[in-house]
Length: 68
Figure 1: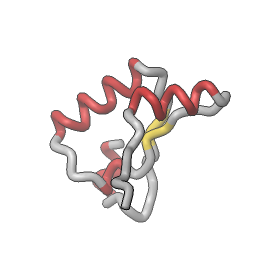
Figure 2 (figure 1 turned 60 degrees about the vertical axis):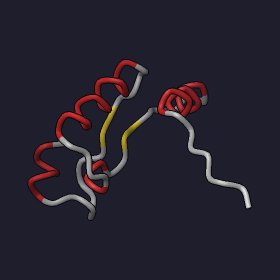
Figure 3 (figure 1 turned 180 degrees about the vertical axis):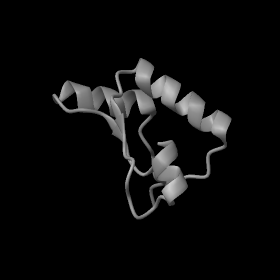
């Protein structure tokens, strides 16, 4: 058994940008962030070079899609 090891946000955004891609946060409504946690995530994501957020997905309520 080998426990799961997740990449850090810094690593993931770096890999995406290094490969010539555009870093986007996918389906943020799936995660139970408080407004303050989401704000911190987005601030760090933008500082690292992130460029977008998924707005419409089956995971989002209409209110979440409007907010994102």
